[in-house]
Amino acid sequence: MRPTTTLLGCGVAAGVLVPAVLLIDGATRPGYSLWHNGASQLGTGERGWLQTANFMIGGLLLLAFAAGISRALPGRATVWAAFLLVAGGLAMVVAGVVPTDPALGYPPGRPEVVTTAGRVHGLAGLVLFAALAAMPLVLARGPHAGSRRWTIYSRWSGALVITFAIAAGVAFRLDAQSVVRPAPAGLLEHAALLVGFAWITVAAARLRRRNVVTEV
View (cartoon, rainbow, N blue to C red):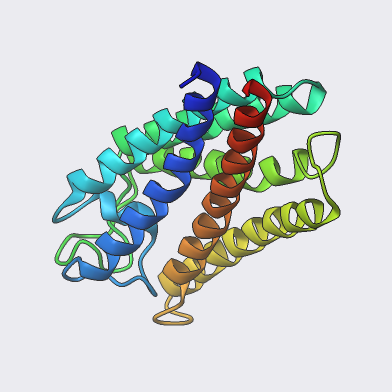
């Protein structure tokens, strides 16, 4: 298998692995609620190591995918796409290394505090969501797009990631201030991640298939 094809395949792997582990671990973790708790909270408490590994491996796969895009696509949009993937990949690695703070009742019995590590993790999360939202918009058009359906799908994906991520932040604040409890902060954040990584999976698969045809 050619190196470029392998690197593009890393995008498919990242797009499937990260949300799958999040959803399966979240659905089976004692005391954790997919409706209520944020994805990053899976990096704390029981089995926290699993989500730490998921973020770190997923981040490294995104970095490999960035290298694949740089090799497979020409043009200015490719430079921006690779930059966003690198930013998102590094943000995921940081989010894995630096855990978030206890919040919204998870882990159970832990006091809710705000630490420097939590702030660093939060900043990494913002970078990741920004990258997931911007990537589809950057590659929605151009000679690499291929079809109007792809353009529409990409634009909607970027818009949904932004919408869900902002709504998750609002829901978290409302919950933390006891205005709405339990608010669907977790559901909205997981939705943003699912839409973003689904787009990465489809984009990587399209590029990989095109690259295989070109090599043949």
